[in-house]
Image (cartoon, rainbow, N blue to C red; front, side, top):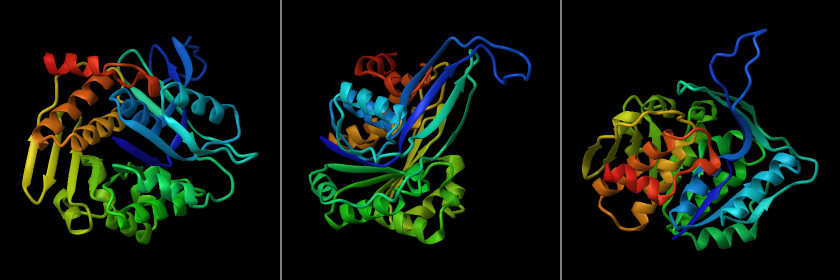
Length: 301
């Protein structure tokens, strides 16, 4: 199973604190502070741990954050040959704060640097992919926007399955960009809160604009799969959520694993829900992505 991601390469500065919100003038000693791959990194690591061949296309900065994230990817068995580090550029960075009561807040800024061009090497990787996955955040990163759109449309022209997660900032993109990406994707994965950000009043409307399948992530309620075959609701697993950051990315990796394994929709949905449930029980992103044994434990329970 060869899965290619395009863009959304992020360095998460993960900070575990006793209590949120932080108060001005009040010092809290953090339990831990570490750098982890965020964004697509959660998806890539989760996919690699499921045994898929994960290939990342995109750009990290020529800075300590960018080189650290790339090193973590290589240690996890992710193919980084198509990740570039343009000289003098920064990495998209996000500060993720999580407390002992399961509350998480995030803030960050996008990278800078010259526009990244679609390269011939990318075409070869996309042509060899069993699935291509991209994120709305990639389209918000100015230097990657055109390259991401070109990649999705190229993959679509080859008949490769295209999956897309619009994210919570999709409505901030120009209307023509939103239209192009929806027309390029076969499967769209999003939360209930993100449905209106696509410009649609109801989730099912998205099927009239390109996607053949819509996967609505519903947190502890599980997920809903909408397609021409009808609507499938799969309940979630009752677990204590300690941190929701990265859970949706890991869910997507499990969904693609099931899809490429030719499982039936109920089995795919149940497996993806179990992956998300396993992830929210852990604090942090990146290398906190669940291993198969942790997913099996959820399914067994």
